[in-house]
Image (cartoon, one colour):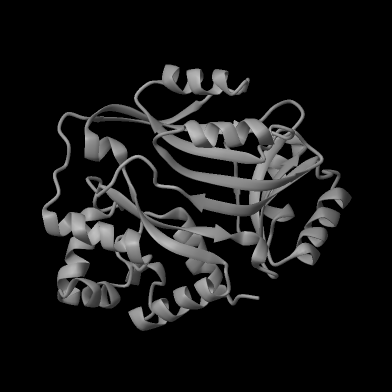
Length: 290
């Protein structure tokens, strides 16, 4: 079981976009962040950190970031596609109940063309199509100094992200490490970052936290605030709203919490039509060596 701060820490690790490790837990000292991260690693909830390359920034040119979604009974093709993808960023694995609208596996990948991905999927005998998430156009690659490349390689070799620990590995000052991370890591104040610091997360190991994607009748949309009162939630843009259902995501403290929401929703006339639970986020960061 985890306390609220450790769950918040995990959610930030999952989202990425923080500038330096100390920002992961706002208002706490870096030593506490480090201790929590190592505790989560010791429990098997998170695995080693990676400096995941932002391929378009490092290679330049026109690129797209795509999502490839696999639904139930497509396990064998998923493995075939995993082996064939060169610029694989991460994969997300879910447990899906009572619906085929949520994917069991989603791959996030960089590619210059959708046709390249279509060919890989066709050879794996998969009917799904990649969906473009974001387009990139870098006329020139962002060049790294030898020391900057070494810092990112050190993260990937050691799995560490805490500046004081990296400083010992590189024989550099902590302030130098932190300044370099602020320049190299992609975050809201640095759109020119070349990497995101991420770790694989085994959500299934947590007893008191569930992140669920839920399908409800479309009429529930006007009542989300009351149906989900007390929970952290957000309406989902995918799968898109239809005449049959609308999708929402929410955090629960466990099955009991989820069951209470389910009963509340059913009593209001909006039965749950299906749901998916986070099981694992696996970081790959394939396709570029710092």
